[in-house]
Length: 230
Ligand code: SAH
Image (cartoon, rainbow, N blue to C red; front, side, top):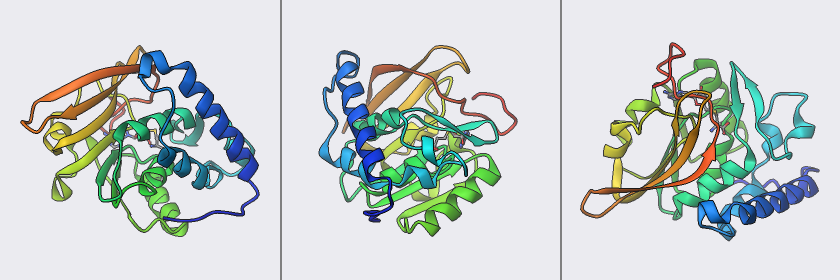
């Protein structure tokens, strides 16, 4: 947990929180939630998104939109970050896996709500920069590595929750296998640049998986390291 009480962006973050609350209400019929938890909103209020965007973009950091972070990748729209986080329904004792570290913003949000966050990024310079940034900002409960998140992170499995922040063609079976019974997996599924749907999956105590489609979304693709979607 890190406190960034006085960084000059408090009122910008306050406006962003109001935008997120408004969009949550507007999408309630699709998502099934009219409001996000206090814990999710507190994490969104705490994490300094302006420290995760590229230099020069700080003034846009609290607009509710994705921004480029280099290497053809983006930092996700804050509303989607908040919504996906909320769907994981994290407890402070949880161990979470994130696929697609990007700039590390989503990992930082998760780290405010869980005990440990493991995050994997396939683009090496992005993964290295994100790990360094998270360390500089004091997020000590995030462990980041460069690799193919499709395979999950078997050494640290099973996880209480898993979040994928890139669009897959299908739900990667290794991730389902690495989810604890009772655990949740949030993932956008659909073709690159085409229609994609955000799914919330829950592994039942008997191992059966139930899934629900919650929202139409648009993410960069989950790739195999050679730019092909997997
Ligand atoms: N969570 C990020 C969003 C980044 S966009 C944030 O908060 O900024 C999605 C990221 O997933 C990109 O950085 C992309 O390089 C990465 N990615 C794509 N395929 C991947 C894979 N197979 N394994 C791990 N990361 C992947």
